[in-house]
Length: 447
Image (cartoon, rainbow, N blue to C red; front, side, top):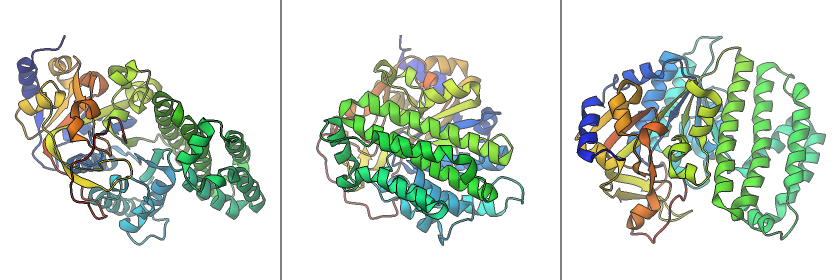
């Protein structure tokens, strides 16, 4: 049963830590992380400046004070790996803007924005000061949308190390050529049996690459190991992306589960690779939407049979995971009106009366942090199911309840919450379109 709102508001207000915009705002959160191996930092939208800013500040503290050495984000593997090379000083890109220029796919503003630009430059400067022999902090993607970009990356790698193997890979990946680099067209054709699928080809290519791991990864020390791992992950991504697009027309649960499982498998493979090559226990920060990081078992998603990154991480790593959700009441957000549309700065509707966001708003603090393990009464008050808002890359304020709310237990999804009552849109590096009222869209487009 939901606790009366006025009781829950008082409990939250008494237990929360007010944030003042200072450098020590998140000291208590970093202390609460303890010896966790994975810290999951969410966001309630893909276009809110304060969420990116807070994640960057928390991550910087974890890197500097707790020896975290990997940042894994809800982005495509090859594009993020270009940033990884830049921050680790092994790329030719002249600055962070150039390193982020690989992010060409919609929604560009998720990673090509001012907050990410500043964080990437900070990470580069941090790594330059790391003493020889100590691990530098990397930047990695975990998503699976980059079917054709990952194919190109595999071929470029094989061209360098084994031209004959590259010829075999081109023959296998040639299966996709008729679709003119349109994965949706491939998914439609494969899903409706309009032609042969590429499933056997992509599996065969991954298997061949894996069988040659010992040879290819040992040719030039750790550089060769890292480059082989980059190529292997791209080949694995191609295999999973082929299945994802093939299942696109078969039902959302299948594709959602495949995508989130791929993301967790990528985190797992990355941590194992870094453990092996560095000879130490790797700790990683993960940036993704709340809908990916809040444990799906405590939401409507789980009732539909969906799993997500937060659930799978808890199942694999247990108490080594610390999970932070973010919320807001109102403000502005950078989002599109439909898939593939231009980014706009949109006003965010005030949160609904029976939502967590409204409860946090009624606590009457501009910004606060609440850590559930140090505030059991608040954790109990926030365990009852209420509405929770999720804005992806599309925001449809006209259909707010249908498009952007779901029921969940907040304190069971997350270990902590950061609430910013009035938020502002991120500043994309590209031009922002003027706001125009949009046609209705339905959740969960673009999370």
